[in-house]
Image (cartoon, rainbow, N blue to C red; front, side, top):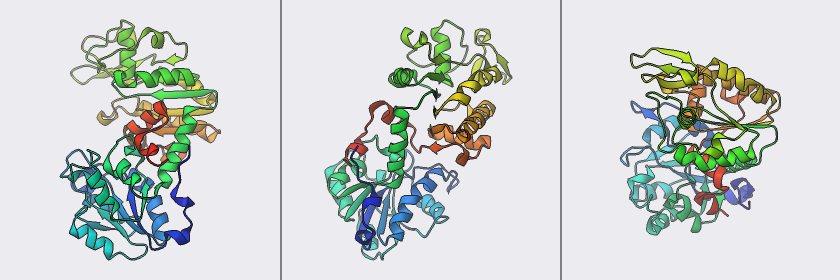
Length: 379
């Protein structure tokens, strides 16, 4: 894949240049403060590289689902890593004035891109206004490269365009996951089988084993004619070719919660009408352990249980096994905000776990397609 990375620009050519960096600082905020620094920490490497090279760094990002949400809390959080000036404007006089006043190494963060409706419409006039702020463009927003928005694909057509260090690393690692070393194991959780069906089929082709967990496992149980009680079930169920695959692994015991909040471990065929499956069980972890131990490549997306309700112990146990496999030489790629949040909540240190992708949807889509709008725009 021919994609230029920002570290291929000679440092003397960066000095004094205005560089527009599309980052993904769409992070959780509560009570006006950022609650998870993972994406900021991962995205800071490119910002720091450019700033230390003497570039004038102009960062744009979106945040949240409400266009009125502000990136101001993100700017405060970024100050833990280095000096950042927040400008509560995008392409207006305040932003332009601030850019004109920049000195070498300065870092500006502009306001939420989605305050302008033209961003998600990939409007050319908005792309031109953004591009006019800078001389070079760097896309470092891997978690947003599957979206054909103005700041992702529009600006890349108008300025010399490069991948940031984060996007470069994401592509390298996920390319490896598309063609894994053997023996290989994929762990896929979450919900909505109808959106994941093509990926499930691809992983069953490419990986020696695919373990379906979370709500996707409920879909397998339902398709096999078992009772799933009050459990979350997808609109579509797995087809016979998936159910019949010798490579498919599913939980052999589950944690089931009754409507009065009592949870206990059962076999899948013991789930009653009042039960909701909220996690796998200890026998499942024991079943999975040898597959993890012998794997040379492990891909993991999606926690095993409803971690936000405290069902996290089996995700923790699997994370511990995966960390040991990596220490033994396995290559590990883990993605999805929920997966990383669940692992973090479980107490297993992120640095023990291999490559952690900042993209959930983008990672799964890239696995499936091998390209995305934002990546194609850089080629």
